[in-house]
Amino acid sequence: MKNDFLNKDTIIAPISGLSGGSVHLIRVSGPEAINITSRFFSNKNFKKGEKNRFFYGKLVNEQNELIDDVIVLLYKKPHSYTGEDMVEISCHGNLLITEQIIELFLRNHCRLAEPGEFTKQAFLNGKIDLVQAESIASIISARSEKALQNAIKQLEGSFSLEIKSIRDNLVKAISLLELNLDFAEEDIEVIEDEQVLTLIEEIIRKIDRYLNSYQQGKLLLNGVKVLITGKPNVGKSSLMNALLEKDRVLVSEIPGTTRDFVHDEIYLENVLVKFIDTAGIRISSDEIEKEGIRRAEQLFDEVDLILFLFDASRTLDREDFYLIDRLKDFKEKVRYLANKIDLAFLEENLKHLNDRPLIKISAKEKINIEQIKNEIKNLIHTTDKQEVIVNNERQYQLLKQAKQRLLEAKRTLQKQVGHEFVAMELREVINLLLEITGEITNEDILKNIFSHFCIGK
Ligand SMILES: Nc1nc2c(ncn2[C@@H]2O[C@H](COP(=O)(O)OP(=O)(O)OP(=O)(O)O)[C@@H](O)[C@H]2O)c(=O)[nH]1
Ligand SMILES: [Mg+2]
Image 1: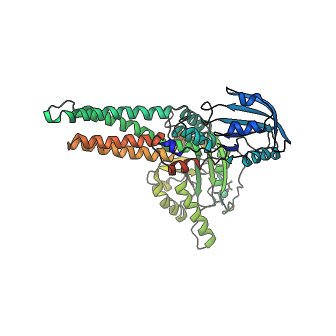
Image 2: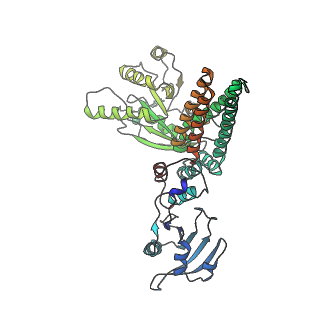
Image 3: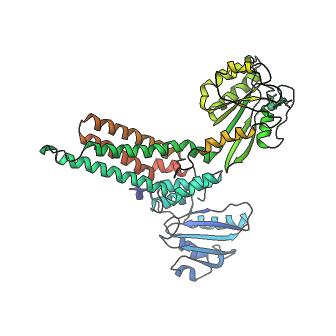
């Protein structure tokens, strides 16, 4: 079915970065790739070339004027990235040359490749499945070594294989159910429902593991976002500096020192951690400050961890209470930090915090900063042993739907309303899994996926 979407055009795009570098690489893919190239390429062995190999020669334009000395790599269908006839031209790293070559091909029955189109062709030609195609985008955008490892694992096809093994189990369950249907009239219970139930539950557990890995996958891919908040002068910027281990933000004894958001990043165990220091939140009638508070509060939703700071050497006041109250809705992702413990720690404040776990720190004297970093590491760690981590929204949504269907199948089985209904649900699950790997797909889905790629991928 997916071959219906295969286009028969010959497409071209630069595939290497175009700024700097001594060599640029241009890819041409499609039925006319070899013909067009051979018309303008001086090496006469090229057209006869049977196997995948490279050729050196001069590339000229229609007027036989030299464009550049180039090396051309020849890939014969289906032994290429796209699965089509494909040519890659290495020219000197000058944008004027690259443009001339691309223009030449555009004038001669080629068109510019759309973003992700080479990878789309690879998918349509069965070189890779959709999970693998998406992992290529993840490889390029990965911001940490861990995310990169995970994406490479997916490109190798380990997740696709897991999905396939789940599908095999579903087929097994369906055939058990159908076996029962065949004998239904003879009133023989060929299999125990228990057997199917066990299979379904096993699959649900597996899918659950993938669903749980999603949050983690997102953290690995995009980095962990940590917001530092609290009322003015409690030591937010001092903490930011302590976490970054440098004097990044201005610190002073005057409340209201930080006026806007300050961002900076570090790597913790190969994962990117982005800290955001904010202006102190105070209750005010000033419109500008209100806007600042609104923007900071918007971030509560977006970030992965909120570090709420208060000055432990002073009695909490209504500005602290305001924030403590606002943060109630973000329970799990808030850490309460009692700062300035080098000065004092007032026990009386504890009654306002209702047993919330506290980390006692001194941003200035660098006490217990490691403990905060450990909290961040814990977010990243939980699925260390997980084989594959799902980090793709589309795959996640399909897995979620698959789980819902499986739960429905389980209920139907337990209600004993008929095996055919259970089998129907399980077939739906198979379809959802086929959508994940792209064996069932449609033009809109593909367009959406590949439009997120960059040109030349
Ligand atoms: N003794 C002590 N002083 C601290 C500590 N942390 C911060 N301070 C001091 O508290 C004052 C305010 O610190 P900042 O880091 O600027 O506080 P802030 O929360 O960023 O303040 P605003 O940007 O104004 O909201 C400075 O004089 C810091 O030196 C600490 O752990 N112990
Ligand atoms: Mg500050």
